[in-house]
Image (tube, rainbow, N blue to C red; front, side, top):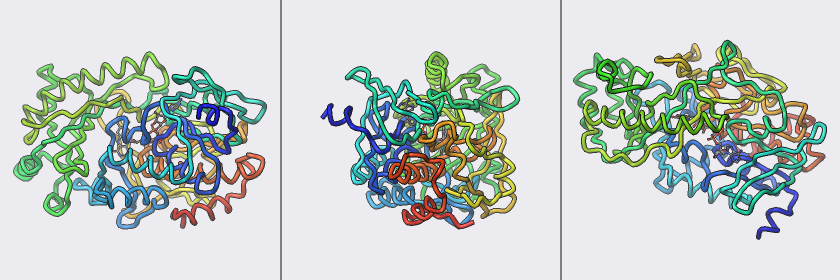
Length: 456
Ligand SMILES: Cc1cc2nc3c(=O)[nH]c(=O)nc-3n(C[C@H](O)[C@H](O)[C@H](O)COP(=O)(O)OP(=O)(O)OC[C@H]3O[C@@H](n4cnc5c(N)ncnc54)[C@H](O)[C@@H]3O)c2cc1C
């Protein structure tokens, strides 16, 4: 088994098995490529299974579904197995639809889909070095229980979220916002079971003046099968003034998962830490857990429905919203998004707004497309840099400005970008491995055959 894994030359080696890496692997595998996924944890799904992140937001632009393809298959498979409600209205209408799911179910379904596509997965394995020869990556060095190994492939896909492969290959990268390099805060999510949803709804209804995101949309709480809510600003501020909270945020943000009464609390904020610096990341885990401890006391005391809830877990590891971005052949900007620039080389769409958690304190800065139901496109050129002809990035580390990353960073989009990277990688591997020389129309044709929606 070991020899088989380590002695192969893979058509496509995908580093990172998050949603982008998993989609890349499945897409490439379905096109006949011999694919290896190298993932540092023991499961697929990345932030969704490893950081308590959810729900998936969003596949839709208003009523129109603009992210389809393998991500949609994933949702339907989970729905068929009772692991997801499918797409439902957001009770806050921050976005139109969101997609709750059970993270344990997601792990199983991703295992299944990756295996069906004929991909090999090597868990508990970290890519720590890249060997580059001129404009090509030759191998990556991985570390695991078997020690250090060099692994070879024709084409590499960077699904690490942080752009590890691209950075280790010496490609130009950016980090954080242009003015001061600060990244969005990290968050240690929490998951609770046994939350009393009816008690929360009743509180929101009777204190609607304090729940601005819910005003005028109260009826959604009666018609939608899962609750998402945001509020408790006054209680949060008062607890902050009493010195009970050390969290630079202004409110509590919660999402019910596909399991009734199970909630994700997305509220801690770890400022001034760097997801690509091991010391900083280690500290972030501990700061995050301390904030979770404070927040747990706050929720039980001040948020109806949490008094008897059970804290299932924190993390399990801290969530990184943004870190490195590749400087690619094209860099997506906020203007492209807000002006809905139509790229002929489109490989994915999204309608998620620019959603910036303040890197330096309280506040969240959201910029929506001017018309509800509209969406933007992301071009193929954001996935590669010509200095490395056989490397593609997928997911949140594509070539995008700080502001644009704050829009494309969420799961459905990251997955769609991963699928595009996987298709391109498989096509390039059929030839000389050069992803920069592909005819984008061929990539688009394959993506459409795999169910993607690319109409401009
Ligand atoms: C706190 C928080 C809340 C969020 N909330 C939402 C939300 O509600 N809805 C939503 O849709 N999105 C949300 N997001 C965004 C979303 O979760 C991520 O942006 C998305 O998962 C990105 O997918 P990815 O595949 O690019 O990266 P990731 O999910 O980060 O996956 C990267 C994978 O690569 C692995 N890896 C990393 N480095 C290496 C290496 N060197 N070698 C081997 N493996 C490696 C990791 O273990 C991981 O499995 C949130 C993010 C955070 C941090």
